[in-house]
Image (cartoon, rainbow, N blue to C red; front, side, top):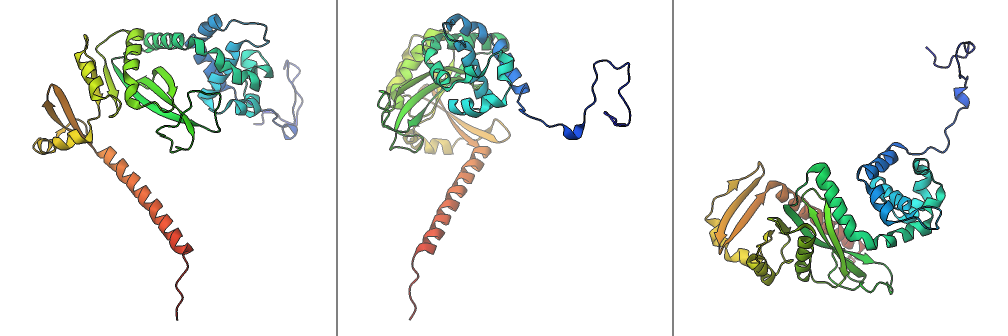
Length: 329
């Protein structure tokens, strides 16, 4: 049965109807709608519209800063990219203009670049607000917190960024200036706080300030901190143990300490805690040491070694092809 039959006229009783020729129809200016609508709805459900409308009060500008910020956030949620890409490509391919009742002025590149400058003064309030919404919506607990540092490098001389320094590069770009970023997240990956520090900041000098900051924001609690080895020094760990309310933490043990306990580990039995994870436990000096063996981790490290070996073999073959062959007499 044809949806639009060509062999008959539209019935007289059919109201608001029209005949179309499918062969002459074409699609123009297709725009993404559903994901943008969902992003805007999440923005409303989190009450971020109320939060930012109170802090980014409209001025003489045609488009409020809160709408520019919502555009940036929805773009980062759906199709992360640069502000310039949002300005040149993404905005015109979506229905954000219709959903927000605005025009292309909201995606002006100058306003996109300037928007984040207006948020810096409200960073602390935002973290507290999001933490409360997360707790209200999902009954989240903050008993276990993960703390780590990363870095991002900058192209160019970065003369107007005083924090840009040369330091230990996690990106493999020691020739570039960089910034160090400290981050605290929950086990669900929800960020609680972050700080941008000088690029030459040492890992072990950042922890004490962050502990104090988290306690001032969320109060002292029986929470557990999880950190890589090298972040807390022995002195900092001692202060954490001897504080009025001792801080519990799970931290990587230095390799030198592990070597000293090697014989003790050999004498202990393995205990299976999961299908692919076994552990050995050893108590010493009021501390509990855990040696873990993971089949998944072992497979991952073997794959990394195979990949590195394959890369080295490929380079050796390339070098062999480029070397001149000895002449035969």
